[in-house]
Every structure is written in structure tokens, then in C-alpha cells.
Image (cartoon, rainbow, N blue to C red; front, top):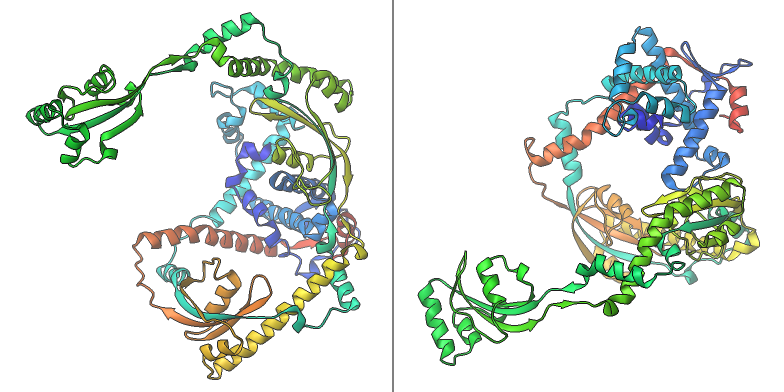
Amino acid sequence: MMDTMRRAAKSWVAKLLIGMLAVSFGVWGIADVFKFGTATDLATVGSQEISADAYGKAFQQRLQEIARQTGNAITPEQARAFGIDRGVLTFLIQGAALDNETKRLKLGVSDTFLAQEVMKNPAFQDAGGKFSATRFKDLLAQNGMSESTYFGTERQQKLREALTQTAGGDMPISAGLLEAQYQFDNEQRDARYFVVTTTESEVAAPTDAEIKKEYDDHPAAYTAPEYRAVAIMKAEPADIAGKITLSDQDLAAGYEKYKGEYFTPERRTILQVTFPTLADAQAAKQKIAGGEDFMAVATSRGFTEQDATFADKTKADFIDPAIADAAFSLPEGAVSEPIKGALSTALLKVAKVSPAHQGTLDEVKPQLVDRLKLDQATEQIQSTYDAVEDARAAQTKFEDIATKAGIPFQLIPATDAQGKDKNGKDIDIPHKDDVLKAAFASDVGVENDAISLDNGYVWYEVREVVPAALKPFDQVKDQARAAVVAEKIAAASEDKAKKLVDRARSGSKLDDLAAEVKATVQSAQGLKRTEQGASFDGAAVKALFAVPDNGFAYAVEPDGKGARVMQSAPVLLPGFDAASPEAKSIAEKLKPQISSDMLDAYLSTLQSQAGVQINEALWQKVSGQQTN
């Protein structure tokens, strides 16, 4: 809630959260930061202290953020494996360094300013857009926060932003940097290449030791994902409609209500030919009256049948009222007199008339019944919701609630975060994305709020959590063997390509080398280092641009079954214009990168100046792992 209220996505907080993993090791390369022995604080930054409790709360908040953003819950152990625990501590250290600097500079924020900010915050305004003291207090209470805590947090946030927005603000981009980025983005190369492949028969069969080593070295590849058993109820109009019975009076009233929607207006197919003058139109009319075909007249004026035909149109489809009136007043087969329209003079012929039709109650009864039932069901959704919530409050089981309410119940014995069962098959789950995201952010025994739909609700509860676990070796031995074979094939292909490139660099022709390995030389034009496609993947593009003009390079194919031998050819690069729209676009792209770099450098300097100390013994305890 605090992030929403502060719009933190525009602040240094969001920037740091987004890049947390990237910078999480920044403070860990300094071995001597671990100075503490028995102190109670987890870390100090200058005069600022970071408690173990503050770290624990920040760590849990980060796990919840990841679950909301990805739809996948992450355990503390998994988070530590990814370095998220260190990222959280780095984030806290950076914040403390900013607090230390604001204290050193004796910066402050007035109560009046904070009060004005609260008054302007939409989160605290009523439906009329005015500040609501009641809403303000209610929101704070819902989040377990007092006014003093809220204002203290806001004061700290404003002071931090005063520093970070200055350090990471817009920076001027030099013409030299713009040109360098332009050249990097737009340099092009053509390539001639062929692919050398390797078959399984060309590599040594994997030994049991190699297969076991593959299994031991890559546990993630052989780990079953976390599975959850989830119970689901849902109430949507379609779920309730089947229980509704309609009387004859209901049908009669519904027919009158929706009668206009079962009316089909008259439609006509009209042939139209336009003329520059009324005299021309009259002359054409005389020819038609004398027996000449209408379309023959149209063709003589350069109209095709498609040009002259307006098929199956209602009167409202004709923009010109004069044309519309004439077209819908003539009998089928008749030709009009010359019509002086708003834009042109025309002759019309009515080729086909489909009369208007009002569907009778008997004719529309099936679809009307479905519609009326859905209408009534929609009106009953709220009462169904209330009944379900009352039953949940009484600790009634989902199965019994669903039976009594007459709504669908589904028990999914095991699903992963992508909605697949233990055999990898997709499970049919109502509102799948929303339900899975919510279920994997919850836990066993948690009473969850219903998921609100456009016109209904889904209730869910986690019945069981089966943690991610390494599969037994015997169960995945074939998979591990295939991985070893694939690795050997890729390595053999890479070795072949490397040797061929060495020969090419020594003077052998690309075509001769391709002929030796029975491969076909192919070409690719206009490749850029910032682009890749089906014919040239990222690894191949990177290798191509890593060699000089007309140089030779190689890259393993994406499927690992072969490797590409390439010769690079330069393409003339258009001159750079610093005033061009492209230059301005490049500048806009560079600004956030430079701002981020400046902010990182500033935060690093603040930490260095303040001095960072981390209680190693306490860190080992709260992180559950050894530090370096």
C-alpha cells in the first residue's frame, strides 16, 4: 500500500528494487566489512543502524513482491540461492547511506509540506476528489500503521529522493557518445556461412560416471517443481443460470424488453452509377428504358460490377439521404429516375430486397431464455457471494459450501505454477492465470479473499504444498544421458568449426571448406549486432561482430547439433547526424542508463565515505548460510 500511495515506481526505491539482483554483490566484495563480533545490530552505515528485525521484514516483503510480480511463490531457501537475501541487505545499506548523508547535510522536510502531500494524494481522496480524513485513517489502520509512523516513513522517503533525484537526474549526452552509440546500433555486416554438424555416432557413448556427474552438477535440471493441491469454487452467471426457472410472464416481459434486438431491418442490394450532369443521367435512363442492360451502361462509364454494387445494405448504410430514400422506395428490379444527391447525380437499380422481420416470441425463445436466465443469475451473484462468505466464516468446507450454493467445485490434487500436473499435462483451471498467481502466493491454512472477476468470484484455498525436490537419479538417468550426449555433440561441433576457422584464417577458401564437410554456403545481408532472427541467433551475431572486417568466426548452433563457420563482410554505414530524429531517440535511450550509472556511483561513494560494517555472526544466523 505504501508503494502505491507514494507512487514509488518513479523513485529511487523502484530503480533499486528492479536492479537488486544486479547490484546485490556490490557490497560483498569487501572482505573487511565484517567487523562485528557480538553487536546486536546486523549492520551500521556511518551513524545509521540496521537491525536484524528490519532486515527480516524487508526480506519477507521482497519475497511477497516476487510472488505478486511472477505469480510464483519463492521459498527463503530459493531466495538465498539466487542471492536475494544479499540484495535485500544491500538495498537497506544503500538506504542507510542516504539517511546518513541527509543527517550530515542537516536536511529536513517540514510538517506542512508532508501534510500538503497527503492532501493531494489520490489514495486518500473520496469519490469527489477531495481529501478524506476518514479514508486516510482507515487505510493506515488496514496496514497496521499509525500516523506518526506514516509521516516518519514519508519524511525519510522525501529526504532520500532529494539526494537520489539530484544524483540520478537528467545528464547532458555528448555528441561523441551519441555517435558511438549510433555506430554500435547501426553497424551492419553481411555474412557468408555454412554449418558443420556432428551425429551421435561420432562421439563416445556416455559412461555411468559422466551421467552421474551431469546429474550431480545440474540439480536444477532434474528437480521437480513445487506442486500445490488447490480447492476452487466459483460463481459466475453461467454457473447459476442453470438453476433458474422462468415463468410465461417472465418470458413475455423479457420479450417486450428486448424485442428491438430481435428486429432485422430491411436490406437491399443496390446497383448505382453516377454521372457528372443531370443530362448525362437522363440520357442513360433513356437507354435503359429502351432495353439496354443497367450494368452495360455502368460498364460504358468505366464502372466494374464490384464498383457499382452495394450488397445487402440497410437504409442507414447510405450516407446521402436522397440516395437512401430512392433506394428504399423502389420495388425490386426497378430503375430510378436520375437522383440529384448531395455529392453526385446517380441512377439506381434495386437488385434484391430482403424484407424487414420482427422475430416472434416463439422464434427467439431459445436465445431469449438463455439471456433472461443470465440476467437473473447476474442479479443473484452478490447474494451467492454473501452466502458463500457466511459459510466460510462458519468454517464450512468448500465442498459443502459449493453443494449447498449449487456452484462448481474443483479439487486440483497437484499443479505447478504453470498449471501442469506431475505428468506435464495442462490442467483445466477456471481463470487459470489469476488463480495460480494467487494460490502460489498463499499457503496451507490461509483464508484467502475471493478473486473478483468482471461479473463473479473465484474462491480458492491451498490444501497441500509439495516442495520442489530433486528427482531420484534412476528416474532421470535417461534424461541425464541425453544431456551428456548433447554436450558432447556440441563440443565436437565447436571443435570442428574452430579448426575450420583456423584453416580459413590461414588462407583456405570458405567454399572449399564447406565442400569438404558436404555443407552448403549460405548468405545473410544487413545483420546488426543489436538484432537477431531465425537465421542468425544472438551467439552467431556476437561472434560475427567480434572479428575484423572480412574475418572468420564460428558459433555453436542453438540446437547444439552443429556449429556455424562464418566470414564477415562490412556494409557502408550512413553518416551520423546529431540533429536527426534517430540521434534524439538514442539520447532518450541513453538517459536512463546514464542516470542509473550515476545513481549507482553516488550510492557507492556514500557507502564508502560513511563506512559499512556487517555483523558476520548475526548475518550467518539470519541468512542461514556462510558468508564469504
